[in-house]
Every structure is written in structure tokens, then in C-alpha cells.
Image (tube, rainbow, N blue to C red; front, side, top):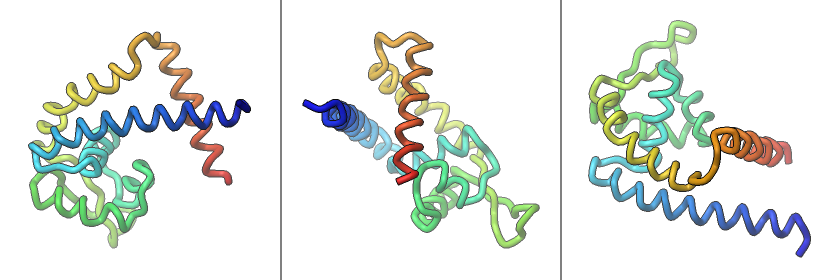
Length: 144
């Protein structure tokens, strides 16, 4: 088997494993009235508060139009807050509300546990190297 085919096979297997983990996580999210997209937005705002809708979309790999409705729904649920953007009055920036912060902190350990189970046996250095390599693959795929 050519090395590129072998790499493709490995990436496909990792993707399938991650999809199974996401399906497991989706069941937990459903109990809280959230979707995986909602969780991605909440996590992103937890890590980088005060982003525009477009910045959140870029960070999670979606088009801005695809996050407009989930952000609106999270706002209506009281999980995020919006403020006018000081640099662009036509746009808003989003933050987690206190309720959104609490929910994120409550759910985070479960999701971290799933991720850690996938990385079992990797040293901290191995995990950093894996992230670097995967980011390089992602960056390369965006060039084509």
C-alpha cells in the first residue's frame, strides 16, 4: 500500500473514532438542549470571549451564515450575551453569560474525558506534536 493511501486510511479511521465520540457527546448535549454546533460555539466563546459572529464561525470552521441561527438560539436561551462592537457598530460581539459559563464548566470535564481517552498513552510532548502535525495537514488542505 502506498504511504499516501495508508495515511488516508489512518486519517479515515481517526475520523470515524472521533465521530463515534461526537455521537456519544451529542446525546449528553441533547439532555441540555444543545447541539454539537452549540457546544463548539460555547467552547469557542469560553476560550476567546468577545468575538464577532464571523470570528466564531472562522474559529469553528463554519461559514458565518451557518452560525447566525445557533448564536441567536444560544442568546434566547440566556447562554450568551451580545454587545455592540466598538470597532464596527453594525456588528455585535458575543460573550458567555454567567449561565453559559456555568453550563460550559459543568459539561467540560465530560468532554475532556472523551478527548483524553482518545489520547491515552500519549505523553504531553506527543500530544503537542500530534496537534502540530494535524494542524499542518489542515493548513495544507486549505491551500488546495
